[in-house]
Image (tube, helix red, strand yellow):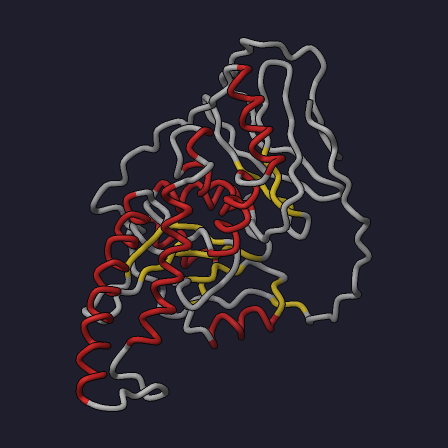
Length: 317
């Protein structure tokens, strides 16, 4: 399903409360966020960024920029910005990119590196000074992302400090690249002339003692209720839901019919594996059951390569 521009859109159209951001591209689904007034960047995996705004009877926009942004990240991008007009040149997305660059620089300058040892004491001191400055900037970028609600910091005194953002580098890069493109600038200018600048609904403050504050989860398999129900409960309790398991994921919540390889991979990365009862216990503030019942797994079957039709950009206005 591909949604274009609804006829009859005129200057001065206002955003209708309760409208939905996000449209679909090709045969895959673009996902938005339904709030009182919306900002959203939704992506169909493998198809690229889908930016959508539903206004009045509807304005839908499909943007073909290669990316790998899933449902959760699309929502996080939306909720990290107060207004749609903040997405171009976004300080939050720019901080995601800068944080990645700084970690690369820190690895090069680290005077304690066993792969790139200083040649002498003078070089060691110079690299130590540069390394300290980089670590300071990493702290500034990381704290910016924490304030935006999209990152967590690993406790401890390790240098450089370790931050994990739910918005990954490629997702931030692709989103900024779209808005910096001729097509993206035309799109933003058209919305500006129409007076369209949706706003996000303010997020409720997370209590300091929220049971899941700062804990990252990935949900997979068949659960007793739709997955989005558990996602909302995790977020309400201060947790963060990711699309895929990484080394920064705290728990994989596995329902029934999960591939055995997926669970093994999570454990290899040091991610804890919970069943639904374990998640419910955490939501209630209780410790994880010592012997969680392992979910029923299904054999992993090699996937046949899919043939994807070429994407054709639909004109917007």
